Length: 287
Image 1: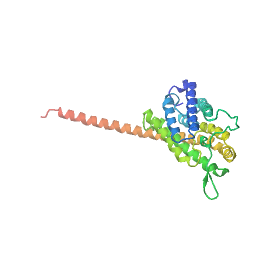
Image 2: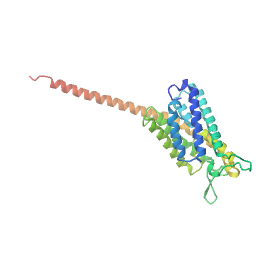
Image 3: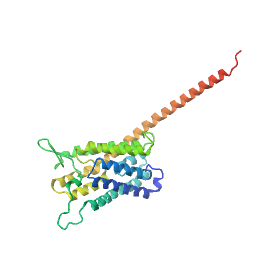
């Protein structure tokens, strides 16, 4: 939506978002949700796709961009097309991961994969004695998980919006911008990872939950089902808030840039007047 010419090449934008999201999901599932591998893969995907689609690969980012454009009616259909491409791409990435991770034969009745290969999406629970354990089995962590996902998504998406902004962007260098976004993702993964379920992306969440629920059982499986709605909904809320905040931030940066430009023009005019006066005085013959 934010890329010049994108409105005239919606199918091409959707194709890049489809395969970009598939690549991101593939990295998450194959690496077991590695906080190092995923940001590096994300960086490469941004460098490849940014000039075509804007490298969203995340419905929360697309929601933020949709809000910052402020053309809600004109961009609504394009917004839905991109979301569809992202969710479909996420499931395609799941399919690619399934091909790689599942064993060739299940004739012995064993069709599961090692637990370390399954990055589950569920918050850590807290026992009666105050010790954390993987995957809360009741609803006691719903509020905390929702706000954690929403706030971390807000921080990540706001960083993306700021880099994309005409006035708020700290650099116009595409490589530095991509690196900034990748580092923001790395930071949020590490901030939230200890509490369980660092995702911030509904398309990745859909694929990751589908994979996790199909490959686990018992309390772990039940916990992922119970908390699935949070990982699918909370990032949208965080992305929307990030988009609204970026509108204010971009306007603030624009005002500061305009004022700085005015002061620079005044300074140049003052220097010109001083120089002109000096030249005229030096060129006036004394009587």
